[in-house]
Image (cartoon, rainbow, N blue to C red):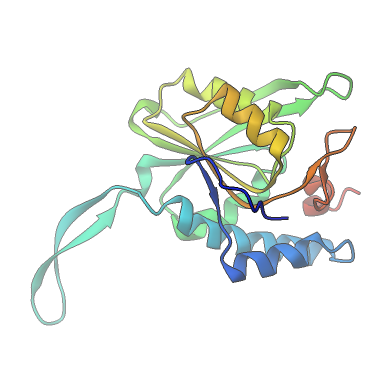
Length: 216
């Protein structure tokens, strides 16, 4: 359910036909665990191209088979993909296939079933985060509580920049993130209709972690 209304400048809707096609196949409740994982890997790779579009490059001198030239390269080691456990790990393989030199961080958060607030239980990041650009990955931006808590925690390390990459979000999630972190750009493949009373995105695709790991 892609939003027909103008989006805030920091929200990037990735509506490439291949992204939308794979997302539709993932939404289908009949998709097997194997198919869901494979599609998530492929879709994450495609989305990684968009989220890294403005990565800094530097000039290096190389030898082609014919002559010497100056060409551009990125420093993947300056990029950190931060997975919000556990579902965020399903995105890592796809984004790392595009930027294999990137570092990886993990933050463990669970959602309190009564308050829907995020509770941290694990946090492990590369060194020298102040020299790095961060892309936080999680399939769903639902209530926005976990995403906001993750970004708040990461800002304590003062990275150069922070972006958030997800498959799905909704107006409530976008509003919560914008209120807490208006400086963080959000990249998503779809903005769905709403949250239900249990904090799940509608129409959504179910519990992403359960579908990735076959724990339904």
